[in-house]
Length: 272
Image (cartoon, rainbow, N blue to C red; front, side, top):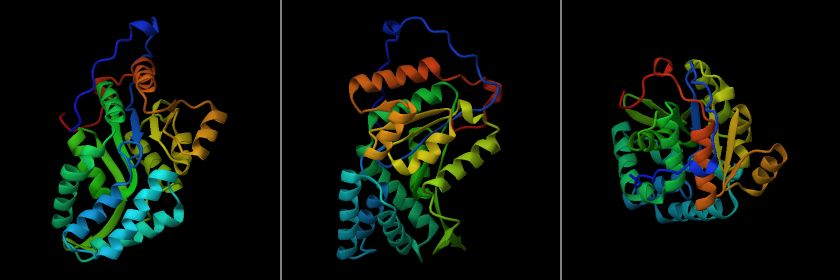
């Protein structure tokens, strides 16, 4: 787990009247790839599958190409669909227990060291306010769930693959959690929690998450791609660059502007 972020000195920001505590749950939604970690978590699933001889070298070469392109230019629907189809092919016929163990291994040996400590620190600021923090990603839900567990977050929404009798079929349950469908899943979760979306937060780097960001009262873009940066400028959304100054201001904003949740309004979360 990333080392704990140092406390922030708010004395330089002046005196601010804190918002009244909320009587309803508040949710902070975090995208995963290039928001919470560098690159795409899906690549590491493929890389580990190759290391375990589940897939062949040409297939991992395509995963590597996807990773490089994702880091340099961001998401593309055709590339995402191609990567998703390969990922589904990987898990088809595998036991659920084996994939969960694989996700744990990927966390320990690949994902953990690629996390951005600064955005992880923001998740902890939300937790300190009593908020639920959910990872929302098109990546397989098993990976998001492992990440959320180790970071002490509430949970994860992700793409779900059908399993029958403890074995994956390789067929999707529903759709890839992407773009509008990611926003729909987050909206359904908020409705179930009886959370007021005006008090909720969302963090993402990608133009494809504009529906998710528009859904909440507190959208924050993180190292945005060009299209999202333009949209954020037009709408006056905060832009978080992963620089010390930008991070300090983002964390001060959460501590200053995010409503705290009254204990009685919280749902059960890890550690409660």
